[in-house]
Length: 139
Image (cartoon, rainbow, N blue to C red; front, side, top):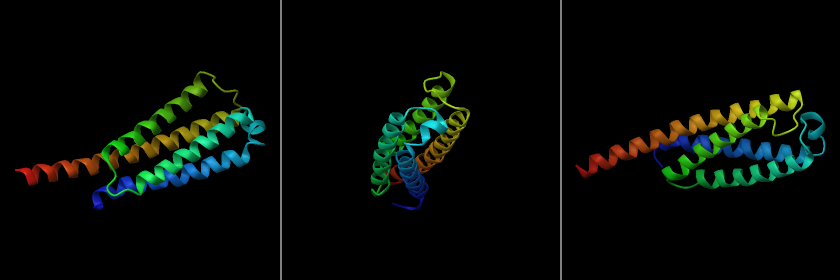
């Protein structure tokens, strides 16, 4: 991949690493996190497993050359859905959160939305350069 896709690749790599760390933390902390954050341990187990699987998928996507636009856009959308669902969980009371739990869920939602933003920029840059190259070579 050329330099124009490197922002997307870096953002996906960071997302994969952060997601893997978050998933492992949630899994390992599932015995104590319910007292600190509120939801039952089963929620932490499910989230931890899901996020670890997601992290593995992200690592796979970022390791491809080139990264497809569809894969990049899919990650942006999934991260935005996660961030919105996290805020909705707090606002609509989907989970029994403590004050610390509310802060934790909202903080991770902001971080995920930030990653989605960088990934959005990366996909836009990578696809706009590709489009310009196709036009230049076809004309």
